[in-house]
Image (cartoon, rainbow, N blue to C red):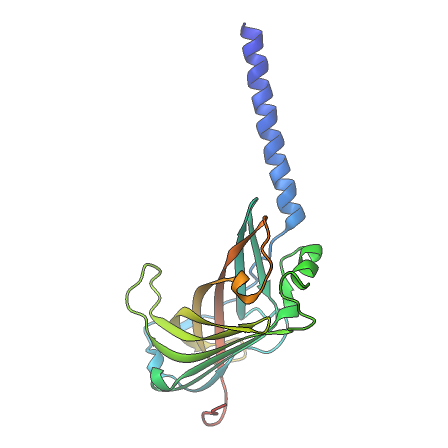
Length: 232
């Protein structure tokens, strides 16, 4: 009886170890995008967003380290974590939120989830169809105080998100973190925020192993542009 019990214990231990190794193998096979942010020092965390004035833009380039747009999708096995490596964020502000504008242009082909096979699938017809729809865009229609919420975001930008030829209303919650100087001694305004969208509402296919809800998180250091405010 004792030997049978010990064999059962050994079997359970081996089974648990096998499941753990299997899950680690799946994670290594699937991969996930990692953050490579190198955040600048904040000079004033208590500054008011309405003290800003002018045009502020994200750093130009591919896979920059001063800003990021990450996404998370819950699947049957684990979360898929990815990011876009190329995008442009533009804030136009003139001391008042009501007169401010935010626009974002994302290069859909820059999607990265640390798995080449999956990235190619994401670029295909079932998902982003980047050949026909190379850009994802957001344009704000209003920026207001959001009020107190569970996620403690102070502001909300309501606007239109365009993807796959479909345009939908989205509410982007964000915080103004403060201002500072980047490594090139340029004035920067720092923001972070998030929003959730249903990818199937934009025409993406349903998939058993991929959830429909996508959470977008972003952090950006916007560089103040020289000259007067430019209204685009």
